[in-house]
Length: 268
Ligand code: FES
Image (cartoon, rainbow, N blue to C red; front, side, top):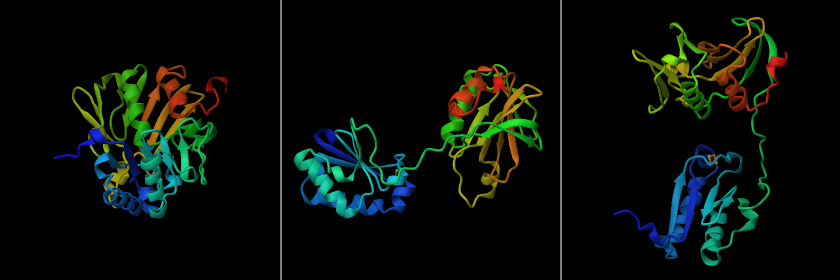
């Protein structure tokens, strides 16, 4: 029988992602749960372990609901007064807060500036020749949305994977991301696999197929724009080309994937 959560007054969402684990989250969670058990709050509260909350620099973190209270740099000593304060007085412990609803800004002691793609740079590339080039993001949180967008906006887009024939993106009928590491692009007769999730360090085969570098390029002489995917060893895994600098999918790439950080290439 699962827990009856209809009586829950407070929910504590403890981050159990990699950075928080390294910073001692398990001790924090155990201390909070022991306090709740021993003080007869077990049946009216709920604790949940979550994956990364996106604030690794403030690890270990926890979110308290109801309300929206984010805590930072927790320890087993800090968490008990926090849990107590919410349950007994419905008040946060301000000194340990990272953020609460309606604050203008976070109160982090270790703020790390978010990574932004650099502007296009003119380079002489071994395969592409003279071209403007920049690096985008290669995590599945960017690549899966990219391929979904291309599925819906395939006009003028061509895909060429290493040692395979180029195919127009209009031939892709589905983009599936149901496997652990692999995104699948389906055509009527084929299935193209791309490794886009983080892969184990000791699996050479997966390391070799994993997209670790995503470069956006513009070959001014050819008026050609595209994306080149490489693995961590610098080997090319595939290339996407767009039929013009005005192509809708290319414009999406500069706006969403490159976050508008690059200059307008049409003016170059
Ligand atoms: S692992 Fe906890 S915030 Fe990232």
